[in-house]
Length: 129
Figure 1 (cartoon, helix red, strand yellow):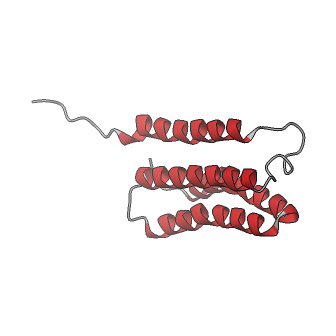
Figure 2 (spheres, rainbow, N blue to C red; figure 1 turned 90 degrees about the vertical axis):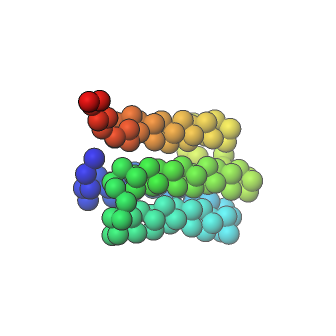
Figure 3 (cartoon, one colour; figure 1 turned 90 degrees about the horizontal axis):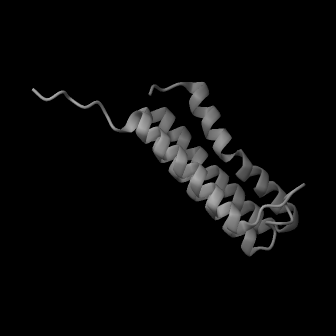
């Protein structure tokens, strides 16, 4: 797994842009909750920029951190919007319940972390002599 600007920032924004949209739509109905959700969007993106600029950790470790933080911020987005009674109001078309959203977010982000672990995180096994 190698550092790549398009892959890094494309994945970062792809994992978090829905939080920004939820924040904007929530702000129309409940400004403080909307701004809190926008902050939840900013957290993984700031961390992603710092990880990219510093590259102290391997790309694999940084990706796992970014996915984990994005997933946690996603769960807090649903919690905040649900508690403010804006979760169902901000959805267009079909609605997804908050409980289903918790499962979806957990499975998607957890699945990504597992997929990256299986593909890149186990390291190379040294042959026994």
